[in-house]
Length: 483
Image (cartoon, rainbow, N blue to C red; front, side, top):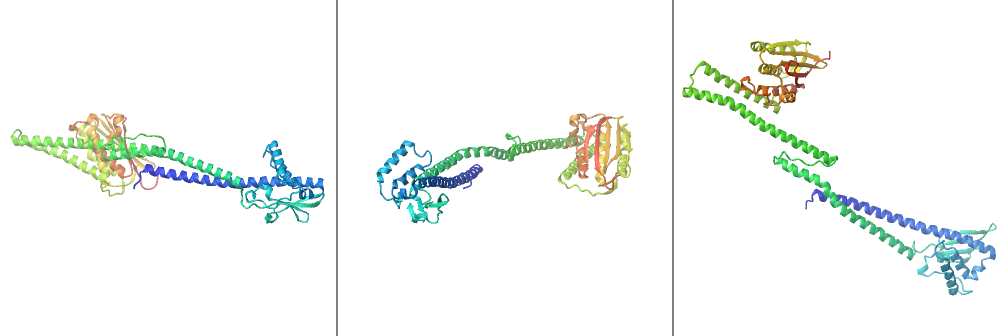
């Protein structure tokens, strides 16, 4: 069965938590067992040291070990006196001593072997030997390899004290305590795992919520609902992904609006000359107009206008597809620009527009396609000629700045609002002052210019002109050494 990402995250977090809890349980249990054994051994060693001091003191008072051989009750009294402080209250210690005295009458030999139930007790494992290694008290056979502590009095060894090894590391009471602690640790681990389960599932759901929202929004986006947006929560990777998704949706929405506007504008631009052609041809067919050179010339002008629009669309489509051919070669931009200017001097003069060209640098070598650069220059000249008022002015400046050639076209009125300057290079865009077909143009010239400049690794932008019109600034990379 295919699991959703929510349950995958849940299982991953649960597995990680289970590993951590199990590791903590095992480490805590190992640490407790080890620490508890060390604690028990430390208590026994401290009690054995206390017992050694008591035995030396008693031997000093009695002069031999007969007080233990003859009176086993004295050994039990020593065991009671060496209990760790706070083990039993004083009253209970006295009652314990009286009870032991009743159970072990005077002259009874000391026990040599402990019962299995008491085999772990400290009192049953203590071994006392005299100076000749003869047993005084305790299970000598169970001593094994455990070291003996010598008891000294006035520089002489009077005996040896040792502790026999227990049959098991812990006695029954200690084992019961260890089991209780292990059970408590296991219960804590189980509760921790249960709490982790209760917290992990809603946490996984919360983590997956923005992913699910992105998935649903993406599904809507594939259906063409470009107005879809997702809420941005936080500044982490998911928040950044949501921001990128919203930016993508906004871009697609703008592109869809531009596409619809493009189709509407193209339909309008194509329909207008076709409607004029149709009307004039129907007028000729109906005899409303006579077939005269003027009528034929009007039809020819509309066909040329339609042909220019179709050619511009074709060139723009080729540029967008990257199929526009560029045959670049080393060339000087000056002669090419002057040739384009010579072509347009007469039309500018006929309209009364002053054309001024200032060359501030010589031999500007470019790696460029001459035909495409000529198309760039003629489009810019045609644009200024078409939209500049009669009696205006066009200033063209060619200069050099480090590794780039700078070309500036500054024309006179009418201008374009500053808010619309960036839109001049959009397809089919024309300023409000130029939306008259009598001026010609479909708003594709500057879009084609931008594609040509960018194909040569350059940059083009529109600025307000000091002459009142538009300033087109172009930068093209030069080849060869720096000046």
